[in-house]
Image (cartoon, rainbow, N blue to C red; front, side, top):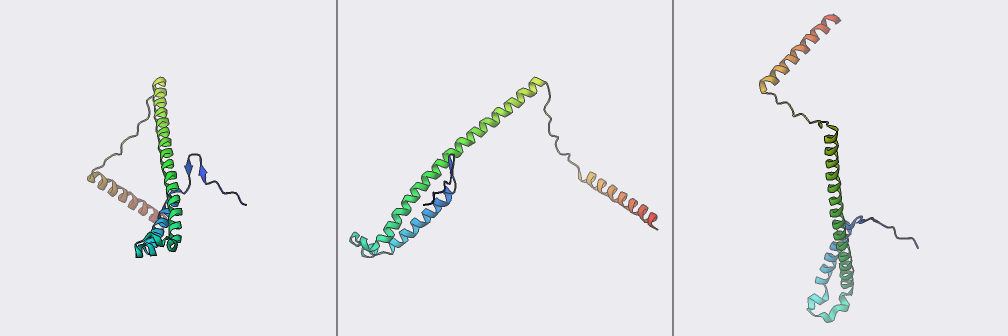
Length: 145
């Protein structure tokens, strides 16, 4: 018999969200089958053998739903733990970089802000560029002729 492929990584299971949604949809379909079954029409549990298929489907999908919801809870806890570790590592790295910069006496480079131009400066710069392009075109045209 073929071995079952292990679809879990360390602390994280792949596709748990899709399994949860699939089991939820299956439970809804089984519930719809029960609602349309004989037990609901006759309003009596004595007719359960006639609705055995929707009952079994509901039991299996509810079992899968509970199992996949547990996997999702485990994954979210694992994700939060990993997120805390990453934040702590980044904070530690920033502190080490700041301490190294202080010890070396080097100022950290700062990002310069964008220059803000007024409308008049932009119009002047564009008109100068157009004038330069015209002069270059005239010079090229003279050389060609």
